[in-house]
Length: 255
Image (cartoon, rainbow, N blue to C red; front, side):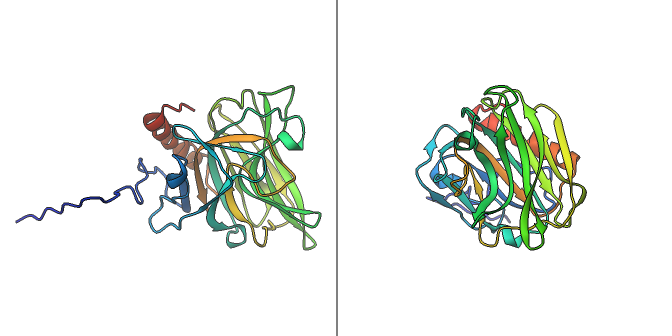
C-alpha cells in the first residue's frame, strides 16, 4: 500500500538549494540572490530568514548593491563564530580608485569609534586600473582588546566578470590563518595572524555591501555560502563547482 500526498499552493523550495551541496561540514547559511524574496532565505534546513536594507536592483539570478546602505543581512552574528569560511559569486563595475569605489562583497565589516572590526571579502584597490582588482580576505585580530586588520590579497584580472571568491580565517590565529581564494581563476594567498580573531560585537554577516560608510562602490552578487569552520582548499573547490553548476543552470551566469 502506498500513500500519495498532494499539496496545492505550497512553495516546495523553502529549504531547497537547487543543488546538493558537495560539502556540508560547517555550512550554516546559503543564499541565492534570485530577487528580494529569495535573497533573504537561508536555504540550509532550519535557517533563519535575513533582511534587506535599502533598494537593491534585481537581475536574473543576482542582486546589485550600491554604496554603503544597500545590502542583505544574514541572521548570523559575527560574534557567534570563531572560525569563518565563506564563498561569494560576485562581480563589480566600480573604479576601485578610492574607498568610495571599493566595495565589500560579503562578510562582517564595521567600525566602532575609529576601530575597524571585520571578517570579509573586499576590494582594496587595483594593480593598474579597473576592471583589474586587488581582492582581499580581511580580518581583525586582537591587539590588546582592540582590532588590528590583517589582509591576504590576490589580483583578479577582470572583476567585472562573474568570479567565485572564497576566504577563511582560523579564529585562534597562527601561520596561514587568513586565506583568500579566486576559485574561478585558480589563485590563492594566505597570511599569518599573530593573535586570535576579534569579531565585531554587534554586526551580522552581510551580502552585497556593508553598513559602514568607510567603503562604497557597487557589487553584484549571485550566491553566498557561510561556514563556521575553516574549509580546506579541496572543500572550497567542491563548493565552487556546485555553485557554478547551479547559477549557470538556473540563470546562465557562468563563473
